[in-house]
Length: 293
Image 1 (tube, helix red, strand yellow):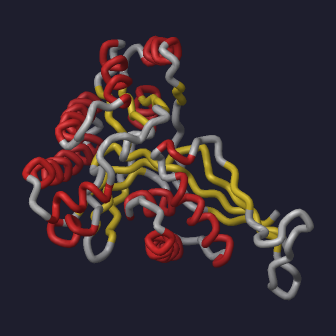
Image 2 (image 1 turned 120 degrees about the horizontal axis):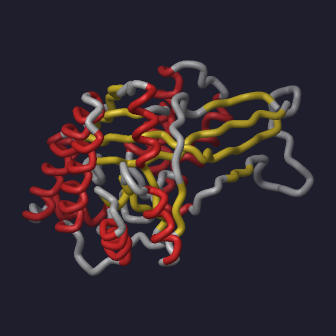
């Protein structure tokens, strides 16, 4: 029997680094996430007795992955791959509770494997949709449902730019500096959390301009926590000059989330002429999914 699985990637509208354990355990993290296409996909073959059947071209594994986004894009590709693997092993993803259980296990496995990503990445990909995730001892999820018209307006305003660079502060740096009380990081994480919660309210109120203003403030805080000039900042500056209302690095900066309620096509053309790869997004509302075939 052959099984296939897929898991969406994710956008991090807000809350970058607030799920690092050192901060989340004391003050609680918050992230506003959106599960997006393209998917990370995988497949596995099983013999009739339930054992894995190794293909002739492979010796160690029957599992292969495909995705259209580079691993260093910062959109949760690495954790999506682990999520797909575990879903194929478990096969039960038919309800939210099962997907939450898989997400919790993936967090433990990723930590063991040394994958530098957060709980927010995993739960966003596992559960699908747009969510306000709260992390601490456990991870809680508040699903945000948008009206069809506002969802379409949001999608038509979004653009993601792939930077090819992840040179902002790293999660490990944030954790270390929070622990030793670095003022900019302590204040920064608290402000990122506040802005993220406000972003969720803006979405609930269908306030696209408010969302853009909050994303812009979030990006400013991220810059204040950076330690060196960044190629990511150059892309953000170009995007803002070209008419974007917000240009926010996603996580460690492998991608930048752009919001342009007007003139998105012109923005895309400007960035492409500057050698920056961009893509439009579509939301996934199911999460990790297993099927036969």
